[in-house]
Image 1 (cartoon, rainbow, N blue to C red):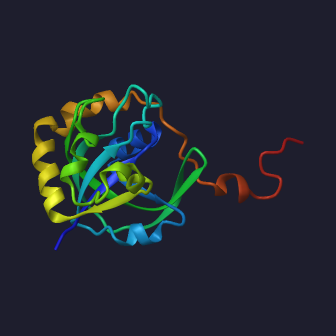
Image 2 (image 1 turned 60 degrees about the vertical axis):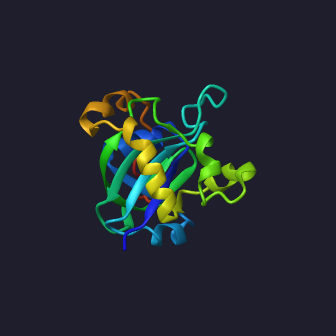
Length: 184
């Protein structure tokens, strides 16, 4: 039986990458979370209130709905966002996306969600890459999210304007052949 995962995105260049590449990645050291995600699982994309670097203005929102399209595997070229390296990942197929800076405000719904047993400390559960949702929570959020969702092609333009982070594999610097890049 397929599961539903809330994919937590807290950095705008990572959000851009996830949406434009229709892929998701897991940081090194998060293999347990990565192994819980399977081809055919549903994903709900969530942007934290700090994702757009304006936490006093923004709120955390569920912005998209999709499906895991491939098994999670080791990336041949890990990607980097800030100081974090992401070593495993999978393809996703985004089935619906909210317009840029729109979406379902999660904070207003935490009292109705079983995944947050203590509504006062709900944000602490989001300090991870993914959060598995109980079936009843997934159904509730899917129903509440539906009015915000547009076809991918209609909604992606606003997100494409976000800055792209260089997703340079770490080995580009550390595995260069001796003398590479030196001028004599």
